[in-house]
Image (cartoon, rainbow, N blue to C red):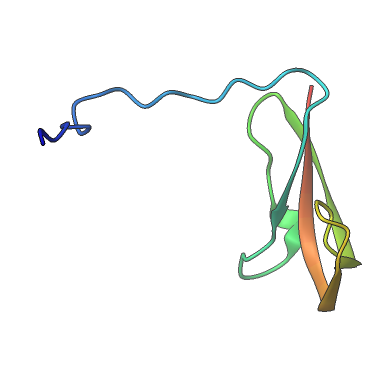
Length: 70
């Protein structure tokens, strides 16, 4: 079975529609207020014990970065 060399292919960038919301866990060292969102996105930090995507309870409260595409 032939293998495909993917190292020479350009990476496809994800394209998000305006209003798209994505959540990412804050793993950074230091203050969450130091986070700067990518260009074209707004961000807020949320300390919660409920998973923002699944709605399931977490064992403890953790910081999440909630980003919205402009």
